[in-house]
Image (cartoon, rainbow, N blue to C red; front, side):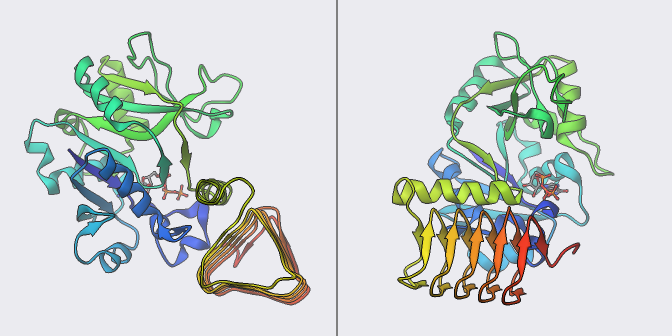
Length: 337
Ligand code: GTP
């Protein structure tokens, strides 16, 4: 089976980390996000993926010049301008000739990390004869997502983008993994940006052609500082056990430093008496003596000066220097870029 992976968004919610690279090239532990996604697809039997590229496509082309990613053959479709999620699917599918075939194909959001059973999703798609079949995940607060109520057979009844929390008819949300028939592509206008969530899926629902699978499998959309942090702590826990930290072998952590449930990248230095808790330190960053990093992300090569503190889901961008003794709380540095 073949898959379109959407990686062309601007990743604005993860700025400033996405200022110099697309979201899916940000690391999760020791590898870019896209490799975790490609590996999951490969394990599900996907033999070729096409990256739907828009923002900073060269980052992917440079990283995978051989056209393989995590062992899966990979091709590229670079949009001339942002086409939205549906426009990107149409454009990438045409590059692969998927629109001329009669085989269903997969589409995944490139910023979703999940253990979803893709085979089960494909089985439901084939048995229902749907035009499209999507995975759903449960969330506590559906108001940031597309909420998708279904009937007993799995047929989607409505597709409600970002409902008010109090009126949401279900807590099952669009999880960003789809099986689509080539026929669905003809619904997507070619001459403008189109959102699959806001336009295409609601139109298919109106004709009863969209099905969905509710899945409790691990799922996270890693597109915000909070979830980018959380997914890494979850992945670290899988590797190292509960409450342990994941520390790259080339990192240096002073014996007097206190490190707890943290992800510490290659070449990082954590100096004497520093405290790092529930945080991610990007490759080559430095946490100075006596400083504190708590529930925050320190970008690659950034420096937290001696005695400084970084708290409350703060984000330090690439090579940013926080002055000794400075305090950053729930803030981004640089801000507004
Ligand atoms: P924010 O700017 O933070 O809202 O994120 P985003 O637009 O990068 O990502 P969002 O979660 O809204 O989009 C879901 C997926 O679709 C992500 O993997 C994006 O990279 C991708 N995506 C969004 N818009 C486009 C587009 O116009 N073209 C392509 N190729 N991919 C897109």
